Length: 123
Image (cartoon, rainbow, N blue to C red; front, top):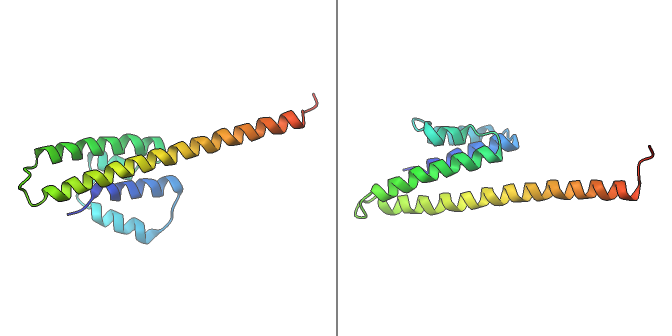
């Protein structure tokens, strides 16, 4: 069993951050071998935080459907529910990252405005 959503998310975040860790990338790609389709493939290939959020949400919908269709007596059921919790947690972490990035941009804009107020440009 593998957590395809988290491995695909790792690849997407590596894309966004420009991470060059070949070992981590190869490990994630190996875990996803044969499963790169639909939202998992899109998530693994995402290049923006917005794309990551969209594709992670779609992957979460698919996982929720899989959990709902699995009989609670199935030996894989608890693992699937654990995956669901982990992916929901990852979704919140990505949202926090996006919010922090937007806050950083707002702060830089404010700093720029204060600088121009303090030192007005001569026209």
